Amino acid sequence: MRRTEVKERLRKLIERRQPGEVLPSERALSTQIGVSRPTLRAAIDELARDGLVVREHGRGTFTAPRKISQDLLPATGGDQFAPPADGHWTSKVVDFQITPAGARLGKRLEVSPSRPLVAVTRLRIVEEAPMAIERILVPREIVPDITCADFESGSFYELLRTRYEVRPSTAVQITEPTVTDVGESSLLGVPQHSPALLFERTTRDPGGRVIEYTRSIYRGDRYRITTHLKFDHTSG
Image 1 (cartoon, rainbow, N blue to C red):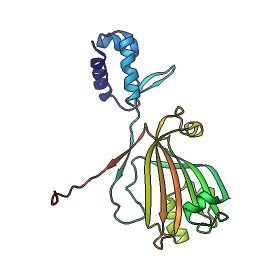
Image 2 (image 1 turned 180 degrees about the vertical axis):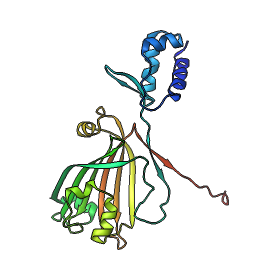
Image 3 (image 1 turned 120 degrees about the vertical axis):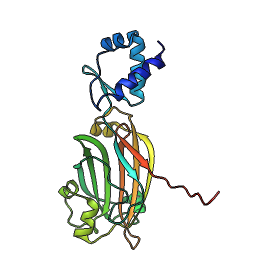
Image 4 (image 1 turned 135 degrees about the vertical axis):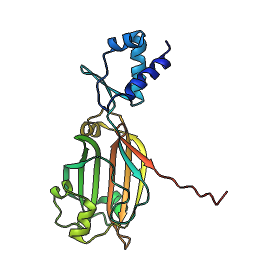
């Protein structure tokens, strides 16, 4: 039996199982499918690279955990720029400090280099698994009394609106593929150089003032984006 056929048999087996469910042992699978263990192992390795299974040393092979899906489509009011991703999300702050903007960040936030910024790094967790690392930078004058705990409870945009009467109005967000470095891998619980998605967002209030710059790293193996497109059939 060719490896492509073995992969297809395994793929169908995976589809019948729940996310995160352990697969039978290589010995059992090789007997069930009727293929040599080296061929089976090579097929499983390819499925792991495709993100369909996860191999854990000493524990076995598991179907991949379900992906957390984020729909992107025009928001209809409120403070969200896109509908919330599925799952129950929580936050854990890993770093909180007040720091001068410096030349590079001052230019990005359109403030002087000496202007103090609230700089927060927080881990975003969904279904008890680390999903993303967010680095949030906000001019301190906008949130003068904000605390570390404020970034672990509720929506940051809702806090801006209700406590500080600052309403996010527009944002430019850039997304590109990347890989995790040593620190990011440790926080996310993934191997170094794992595939990831990098988001950079600059948010402004209705007057055009920059109120936030955020750089986020999302796990490429657990997070996906769905874009809704609408075609104009009136043009060529």
